[in-house]
Image (tube, rainbow, N blue to C red; front, top):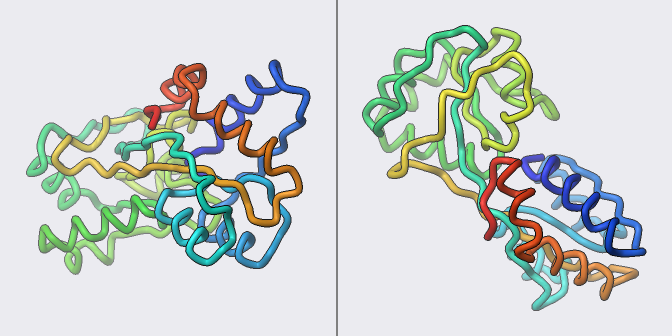
Length: 219
């Protein structure tokens, strides 16, 4: 879901220069990988880089077709009007987490990395009762906007367009969690050449402005 907005913008741009119609279906990463592994007919698969590697190892995407597309970092959000936490340093973020009455983070790769960070800080057990798990398909930012969560961690691209929240800022450099999203041509692709052409466009310098508008950096 982190790539949903940027892919929509890139597909719209691609349509202006290609006669090939493109339909993108955005779902959670776990669901996407499961559907590819189940043999559903997709031409292109876009997931976190390590997930693409696993699909390549299991023969579900074509060897040599992987293209890195974007780097995506994690940001912190609070409800609109709430005080902004200090995120200037690793210690400041740790204090903000400990002070929060409730917090939520993604169940994807960035959330796994964040959970490891809390364990490294030695606070995982202390904050466990305050962690609110977002239901499937519900962005963390939505929980923050509703007032159900005081501090929300999610990839910047997923927070940018959520009404009712304020972005407190990105995680500071030493603890920033960056996910690389990559695309590959599915083994069952009916149009492999067209799929590779689409990925080449998405990785081109022409696509860079759209990526930055959606809170990501070109890979």
